[in-house]
Length: 332
Ligand code: ADP
Ligand code: MG
Image (cartoon, rainbow, N blue to C red):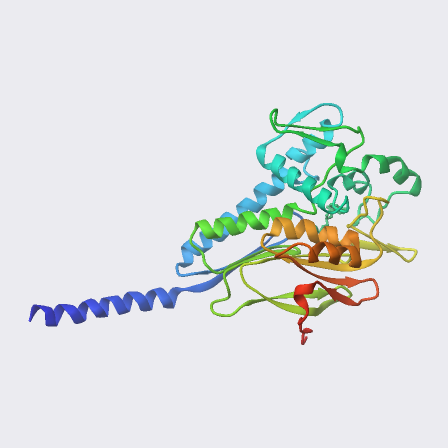
């Protein structure tokens, strides 16, 4: 008698619990302007309040990275380094030390195509004000563009620039790094499906509940159009393009991806997309492949297991790495 009555009520209780948790599970998202770009977080959560709190935490983390690494904020650690490291070793926090170290290893891997000292010339451009350096002023700063000028001292926790004119800018890697930190926060808070995007850098956690996420590669010459849609799960993707920050003058397109050899905007590419396990690396590699150009860029990626690339060259032709042999064109 006792069992007959309690077992069904227990089962009903379980069913109701299950139903309410499934019924309240949902996609939650938010988008905010941070780091000079648009940051978007979307998660699948069975608790609305908790899900929204996690998104807020990710946004706060993005703001922290911006405060630390922005070259425009006068009180950022990066600005302090740029002001002082040309004349003396400067104390540097562990996090910036690690990211600069990672940048240097990518510089070596890409034979200097990726080089955070591009900023020695980069600071003379202002894409909003349509400002670019003259040939003469470029010539003066070119010797300062060389990642080998950067000296990190792990023991003393300092950074020093061996050339006085050196400036650094982490714009080619910091957004991807921030995206990885965002994904780490999602994981720590038991989120199993989600996406964190900062401008051209995204990382996906899990799948989109039983199906892949589809991430579009934009048509560099048509704001609304896509050239491909890639199915993804548990992966990062970064795109560098000549259409994000640019202006044109006398038929020349001045944009934010700079060849460390010339100090000028790269003029032989429209976009470079790299896929891989983490966004810090795909971010730096998309900038690198853009600077290397199609042939050298694809050779680099084809020699890196776990990474793939899609390139759109100056002629508008799409080229891709070996893992993409069956890439289907986008239908819209
Ligand atoms: P975004 O997501 O801002 O479009 P990208 O990944 O395309 O960023 O990288 C462009 C940014 O990288 C530039 O705004 C600049 O800060 C930085 N950058 C430009 N040229 C280089 C280079 N040769 N090496 C490293 N960083 C670069
Ligand atoms: Mg990049």
